Image 1: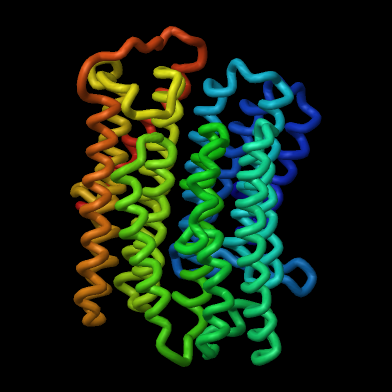
Image 2: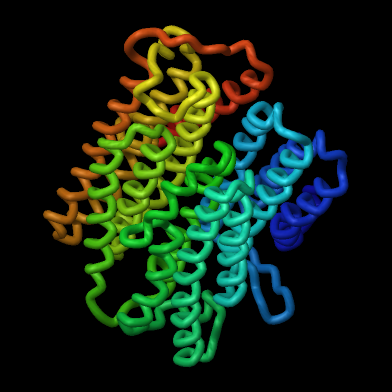
Length: 457
């Protein structure tokens, strides 16, 4: 494998999830999730093989006819983070779906791998059309996975998510068409430093808003909580909503300039962030609390990108990794608590700190990282993002960003108090499947802690 050229490895990184998805379709259904897990580990190894090349300031290209795929540090960070989180979602799923019928397990494994493949396609595309195609493929995967159990209510929620995100993608495509007509190129690397008018930014930003569940297009994300826990973790931590953040960072953080003031977009994102934090304070459904939290954190990330400052952009990228680790772990923890208590209502939970120190550890450290408490990685991401805002003299803007972090701390501690403190409720850890679920969340929380320590050093 080491004899392969970096561009050949890139080709395999792009193809492997789709090849793996086809293979799990023909393998015995009972081993489909475990097979998917092995394929994702292989995908992580492939990413590791090109890491040194990417971070030694060399770009990796792979041409497919006139369409190029490219790896640079930004796309690599987004890509490898998704694969890494996906591994632990699949490990968790080996326990979570243990009582599900084998065809259901196979369906999850197939669409989960295609989901990861669509993320690879988005982040490594150097062509606006291929980026759009993989962007829409991710939406198709979310539609299939949100409606996983095919109940009427679930299908309605899946349809809602698909329609909202696809409509936004249509506006984004119009923006891409303008870029092509004005520059004569669809290659992202060929339009660097090109200027676009504010209305083109607005068209593309609509695609970002819908995919990243930002006000007023946010309602589909809490509704998607009807999906199984591994699916919601994919949506919030590994793939779907993070595609919007990548698209904004790639197109307007490193490539295009806007020939006008578009700070309204940052203010809208901050409003969405604060409003979602307030909603999370009042929710009692554990998954909807975490969904509101995701909306709030996505708003924070968009607000950081909208000041167009390299310090803020670097902070957003760090926080993206921290949020992926933390929120991925929190959703998996929520899935465990739902199975333990038989409910999503936090008012009917309690006492887990005495019943499961490992689950408490995983939830607490992930929660603190998302809230931005040192020395966890979320702190460094939020610190740099807010510093970048203040460098640009956006004082009130930065203060609102600090408020969103304070709200995060409040509603996550409220959630922790309901689920882990108080009277001990009757729970059953004896059921088959809990071991891989606990292992998954403990490792994710530990990785968060280690990343924070590395950033300190």
